[in-house]
Amino acid sequence: MEFNTISVVGLGYIGLPTAAVIASRKKKVIGVDVNQVAVDTINEGRIHIVEPELDMLVHAAVKEGYLRATTVPEPADVFLIAVPTPFKADGGDHHDPDLSYIEAASKSIAPALQKGNLVILESTSPVGTTEKMVEWLAEARPDLTFPITDGECSDIRIAHCPERVLPGNILQELVSNDRVVGGITKLCSALAAGFYSTFVKGECIVTNARTAEMCKLTENSFRDVNIAFANEMSIICDELGVDVWELIKLANRHPRVNILQPGPGVGGHCIAVDPWFIASQAPNSSQLIKTARAVNDGKPSWVVNKVKDLVSDVLLATGKGEHEIRVACLGLSFKPNIDDLRESPAMEVALEISGLFQDKTLVVEPYVDSLPESLKNLGARLVGLSEALKADVIVLLVDHKAIVDTSIEIQPHQRVLDTRGALKKF
Ligand code: SAJ
Image (cartoon, rainbow, N blue to C red; front, side, top):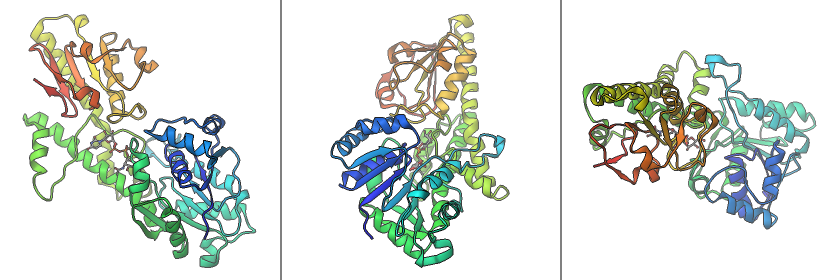
């Protein structure tokens, strides 16, 4: 099969880098997005998201004529769907996945489909979503045959290949990571694996669609459960007067132990979300997964309570009045060295602290020029590191290189809570 024209549907954090990488291999790429501003920005050779080196790649691909964006899908050889799968808005505590973006994307490409096309779903999806996608496409195009009903003889081939790239390192991982390719039939898998091998240097391993869907959910749940273990150990060690960071280093010297790092909680759009997709489909059998979510989601409150205790300690030790106290939060993003403040436990902690200590909270975040309104409204101030280090209580929330590369001198009256175990104190 020829893969000359590739349509990437959804030009966000996954779709746009993927489109740019494929275009950089001198393939014609048509990017599709419902957001007109994103489409216009890309067609001007610029980007609407933040990811290292992506701006240069998109600029070159558009300038050389290999990448073009539109709001209306056009015929192509391969359609690659990379749209979001958030929670349903009305889900309450159930955290059920919302497949409406995948449904809308499927219905939007249906009119452009032609016999011989390959459609690949990359969005993180609960088990069975790729089969649902086939149903949506088949309903919209009764004139074409699909692999669920017509097997290997179908007009359209369908596969799931979950994205697994790490934000901040997407362009490298898109090429170097292994890919798990799950077709509805064996031929679908083989064609999809052949497509990825045109730009992926990692291995393309073939399975079925349901296993590929579950594989992605399992990877992120594994990580969530293991971070929950580290977070729980950090709380236990705090109670028992043991340095958790030293403890983990020592335990990890065992050849079969590899504990992850505790922090102020788990953020981002994947690791804190995907375990719920498993729990939503198997609620009675996913006790460990749900408990891990509760442990990680509970960590920001634990951090806030520790800060309250430290403030009380300072008040007692120094005789200062409450109005004189300053609390500094170092870092707001959901992980180090990026500017993404969405779904960030550090942000959650900073908001609570700013609410408790109104007009007395200082924030350091090297990746923003001004604080979000929610923090400003509570009187929090964005300051430089040297000013923050004069605060009575200093809380390290994100181990940004720009923060932890500096050695800090702690005065006897100051208290420090290092949620990342990364501060260099002398
Ligand atoms: N975290 C810890 N301790 C650790 C590791 C991470 O507290 O030892 C926290 C981070 O601070 C952050 C959160 O977990 O708040 C998630 O960060 P991350 O860097 O581990 O992962 P993400 O969410 O940026 O990307 C993940 C990756 N999945 C895995 O590593 C299994 C990535 O490969 C996926 O493609 C991505 O989710 C996704 O799109 O699903």
